Length: 310
Ligand code: RIB
Ligand code: CA
Image (cartoon, rainbow, N blue to C red; front, side, top):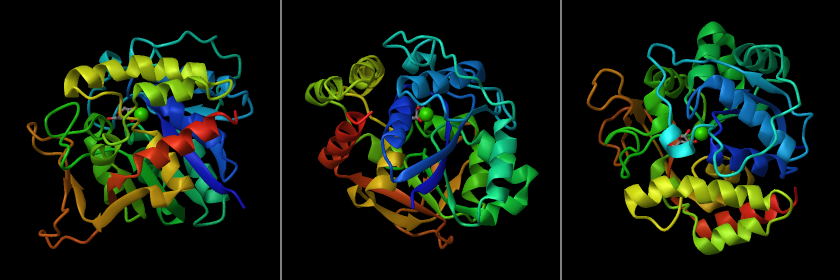
């Protein structure tokens, strides 16, 4: 029986690779894609999600537009990383598949109420605005969620949008605080892990040869990597978001700890920081499996093999 998931996303080249990996994997049943404002404004993330589905020849996937701004702050976007369109690197045709009528938050609520309890996993790979808004509007869905596997945060790696905060958490820290405090089983893929999932020339060339979608994926990572190479002097780009899907497929690729993670929402200096009690000194109850290690070779082998199936 395939595992039912909903991907909540702000595509974003790395989001695109995560969505393609999910679509290439029969172990997963993608109930829908909910889009949120993040890397680029909502109108573009909702368009990009459909571009990605059509690239994978999956116009049947239901794509929903969600929140166009954080719960309590102005939107911060990341065109400096992802380009004006959010999917810079290759120009693909505008989507012809329709956006679903319902709002993403309504889809999340209705689906979690309709599916049997404890059978739907949420995979947020952008700011947590949609998820937190659904939880606020319908608290009854919280105990029905099987697990949340999200990309966000950082501890040893610090932040990537400020010295203290990672982008997804920073954009909507109030939403993150709510999700991390909801009591849902939570797996976190922070920069501590994703910065070890780095592309390289060889890995990108392997993408390029990976079936029909390979050239697009290689073009996206070629574009996406320039920001991190310049900033960190790394050889390649961290493939942040696909780590969530890879975890669902092969959790043994990852190593982490079940610890307490709190979100800073009061200090402008450290706003959006994931205060990860890695050494368990706070006495606060653990609320997340916070990942710290990855088998990068195994991750790229899985990703390349699956992409070639599309
Ligand atoms: O900090 C990395 C995260 O921010 C990724 O999800 C990327 O797509 C951006 O949304
Ligand atoms: Ca993302």
